[in-house]
Structure formats: C-alpha cells, structure tokens
Amino acid sequence: MFRITQFMQEVLDPKPLAPKRNPPGPVVIWNLIRRCNLTCKHCYAISADKDFPNELSTAQVFEVMNDLKQFRVPVLILSGGEPLMRPDIFEIAHRAKAMGFYTALSTNGTLIDEANIDRIAEVGFDYLGISIDGIEQTHDKFRRKEGSYQASMHGLRLCRDRDIKVGLRFTMTQDNAPELPQLLELMDRERIDKFYFSHLNYAGRGNKNRETDVFLQTTRWAMQLLFERALADIKAGKQTEFVTGNNDADGVFLLHWVARHYPQQAAHIRAKLAQWGGNSSGVNISNIDNQGNVHPDTMWWHYNLGNVKERPFSEIWQDTSDPIMAGLKASPRTVGGRCGQCAYFDICGGNTRVRALQLTNDAWSEDPACYLTDNEIGLTRPAAAEQ
Image (cartoon, rainbow, N blue to C red; front, side, top):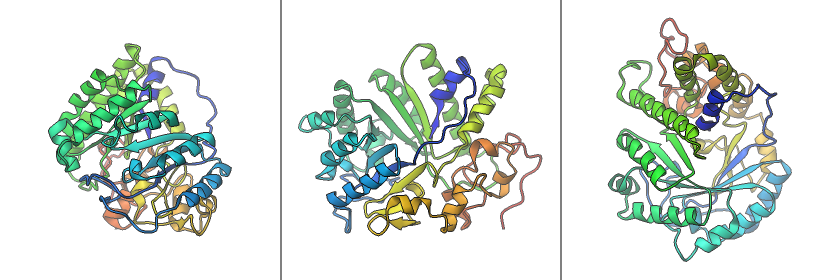
C-alpha cells in the first residue's frame, strides 16, 4: 500500500528520517468466505452466490487467530466474497478486537442496513472499506446488479453516521477511469474519510509505446489527480487519507512529481520512499483464503504456500524452502529486465511479481504494468526483452 497523504505531509512539513521500523508481523488479508451476493467483473476471488466447500469452521478460524497473535500479526482485514454473508462474522470480528488486532472489514456494502448496523458499530472496526466502481450506472454494470450502487451508498452512510471510519475502494479500469473525478467529489460531498485507489492487476502491453499507451497515460493522469487532491486536503486542514495499491511504481512517479513542484524536498522524499521500499508481498503482506490456503498476497490465489489446517501460518510464512517465498523475502530481490536496471529499484522493489509471472511465466522478470518511461527510470535505452 502506498500512502499518498503521508508523503504529501512530508512535502509540506518534513520530519527527520528516523530508523526504519519493520512491522512485527505481516498484515493478514483473510478471505473468510468465497460466497458473495454479487458477481463483479474484476473479482480476484471469482466469487458467486453459492456455498463453497472446505471453508474454515469457526473453531478453525479461532485456532488460526491464536497462532497469528503469537506470531505478532498486527492487522486482520476480514474480506470475502462478501464477509457479511458469513454467519459467524460478528463473533470472529469481536474476537479479533478483543485479542488486540487492528481489525478492518472489506465489503461491497450492499448488505449493510438498519437491521445490522448496530451489530457492525458494536464491533468497533478500526476501518471499514466499501468498494465503489463509479457513479451509479457504471457501478451497477461492474457489479452486475441493478441497485447495488444505491445499496452500497446507503450502507456507507449508515456507517459514517455511526462514526465508523469508512472509505471508498475504487479499482480503475479503462471503462470507469473517466469517473474518478466524480468519485472524489462524492467523497467530499459524503464526508468520507479515506479513498483507496487500486490499480487493476493489468498485465500490460510490454515495453512498446509506453509514452503513448492510452491506459498507461490514464494511470499517470489519475495519479496526478490524487496527488493534487491529497495536497489540497492537507492544506485545507481536512483529515482525509489517500492510498493506492497494486502498483509500487507510484512511489517513483511521486518522486518525479515532487522534483517538479517542490524540488527543495526531492532529496528528503527520495530518502523516505527508499525507506518505504515498495512491494512487500510475501514479507509484510499476506493472504489466507477461504479454505485456509496461504498466499503471498491476494493476487496469488493460483499459488499455495501451505494450508493452515495442516501447518500453522507462522511456520508457513517463515518457510523459505519455497522458491517464490525465498525470492520475495530476499533483500534486495533479484529481478530482471527494466526493473533490474531501474535507478529507483530501492523505492519500488521491483513492483508486483505476480503480474510478471502471469505474463511471462517468470516471477522475476520485469513488471509489465510499470507506467514510467525509460527516461524516468534512468535507462538510456530500452532493456533487452526477457528470454
């Protein structure tokens, strides 16, 4: 996750670089259930409104939570499918809070209503994220259900009015990108605390035409819009938060933006970005799916590291006999192509390895979704194509 607001605050009010403090354990994104009342176009879990076999029981979830706590996992993000369709979700959430986890809920929001808002508020979620894919017609088309936008917005307002920290989650595609400004206006109008911008895990178009590729140019436009909005909100004294996910090139793009607009802060921001270090899949970010399989992050569902029914998460996560985990935990990672030659590798960390794997069958080739030009990453000529 790339915290735009945090870095913009450093631009306006720089603080001395402190020693880097690594999290005590990884953030766990936990897909507790695969069932969902929607069938969204870009769902990585390929959910449907039906029961899926071999999901963890309540007792098994609690056993895993005990191991996670002992392993010093700081954050649990309860997700799905649609987590509110799991009958024991409130029991799980209350236990997570009682054990001291920072507890978040990732939901489509359509099932939040007057009948359950009290139970949701009683949990005391530290954060609740609701996915919105555009303004009403676009959202309903993406979610493949008429009325889903109005239902999600109703749930969002109920949470906001109960003082639950709530945020919009937006995954940009070529189809909904033009509505990003309207969603930012919606955030302001509805008094929403947080905006999470997710890059689609887009496999890219290789190394050709990066300067004219429409989607890559749209990504650059969207990022500049978010930079400007985050900066404006800080100056206005608003307590909003803007973050992005699934493309760690955002850090390098921000550095170039700072060099143009606040050149006196460029060296400071570069040091802060290097300390952040970019992609942390398999290190500080983890995923447990509905059946108990462990993955380097949520986009690695095709690759299992082990199952918590058979081995504790703490053992699975530290096992570097798996070649993917060994490579992800290496510091620095060994990555080829443009990524390996990039002058800002220490900021980005080689970006998202799963995209490289899906496109080239090599997890350590360059990330095809880097939207920066060769000049911007310090290359004097295009890198040789991966073999």
